[in-house]
Image (cartoon, rainbow, N blue to C red; front, side, top):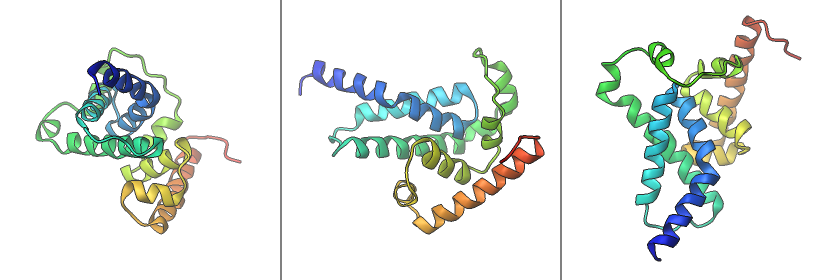
Length: 164
């Protein structure tokens, strides 16, 4: 495959998935600068990935898993523990944040809860598919979804949201 064709393919893949990858990274990193860095790293890894994807679902699943792993690696890195708090980084960001409240409540949940909620409700995966992406059992995913919804509901009630 020539480099021009490969470049067009990469650009198309980027356009198809950048929003999803960024949302996963933002959900896990909890701030815009780190989410942007992680998103860039994910797409750099795509460029280095020399095997073709089997189909669009394989492509999407690979990106989800790679984004999660990239964020986990960054969160474990030694320099992250030695720097300013996430709240201070939020205030330093040049981009204005739209505070819709619900996002903040979801971000306050543990990572496992955030991931299953995002993959299920925002990406439309069922429990079996989420389990395959996260390398766990479908029953575990279902349990996490129940717990995550309960935790989110309690947080929403505490914040005064009207819950049907």
